[in-house]
Image 1 (tube, rainbow, N blue to C red):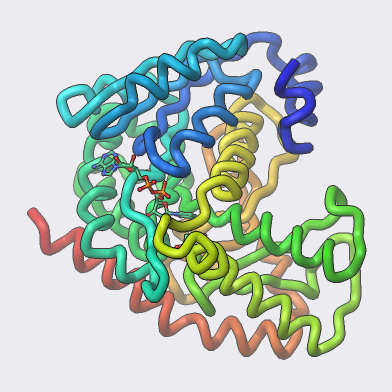
Image 2: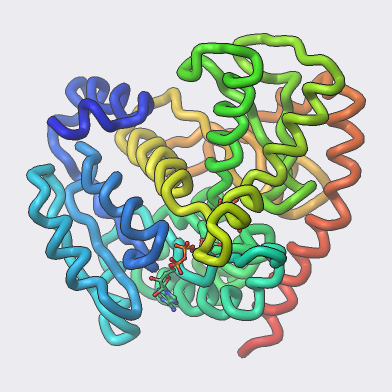
Length: 342
Ligand code: NAD
Ligand code: LMR
């Protein structure tokens, strides 16, 4: 009942699809960092999914109360809580999708890279446990800086001998959600119809919306392109400043991550028409990781949509060249970190 009115359109679609494809909720999802600003509302949104049979909530503290609270919602999934490193392994056993929003958020004046020193180690430890307990799961990393934490995760998985590049995702859905919202507002379009691919990475100028590929087809003046691009690139900072020291985007992020999780579950469930942008191991450019639109399937990334790269505008082409050095440095920083630790 609740989910009918609150669910984003993608979830509503999946509900009707779910009737056709699989009447039973059957997937297990773990959230690492479930007590956080993102973790709590994300847990709620995933609790609303008809595709989830079990929701495993892990955090270093205070997750029992969140789980008790959520478990009273009369939706199909069972909610289990896991606290601290001793229970981490069990939180991951048998899980199909692992979402990682663990780590510290920005305060005004900080870049996402300023979070590296704390979050790199957190992501490394968590992904080691994922490798040991559910190496076959889809791994979805939200913790910043995504441009470095995803390469760290890849290195950890490689060292453990379980790296599947098709199942490791940096969650960049919030960039698409923002782009869709801002474009719909600016051009007076029906929100539900708007889809803007966002490529590159997830920090500042590495976030590159491809406004020329907006669906439905829409034309922008040069000034609109500049304003929209800069707003999408700085939208995280917009929230950090508005929250004035109390953290970064949590609610819109939870909404975006819930959409990405639901898309992944639909893909696992056999829906052959699931597309999302994500920061992944990629051959699309000369960089080892790159965000682009991908087709999701039962085995993760089924196809990287290279056609978005055809016919880029001069502005987009320049943006693409400009983002590469920063993205390359962030990727290398992650790889170096993962390999210098034993
Ligand atoms: P938060 O501080 O509110 O919550 C973080 C949670 O992680 C806390 O509950 C904390 O206990 C937990 N945690 C810390 N260390 C842990 C560990 N070792 N194991 C398990 N849990 C641990 O922060 P938040 O606002 O939820 O943001 C979390 C992260 O997500 C930040 O790094 C932020 O920058 C990032 N973020 C990313 C995006 C994106 O688009 N990818 C968007 C928003 C925020
Ligand atoms: C965002 O884009 O909102 C997140 O990456 C959080 C941040 O630090 O901006």
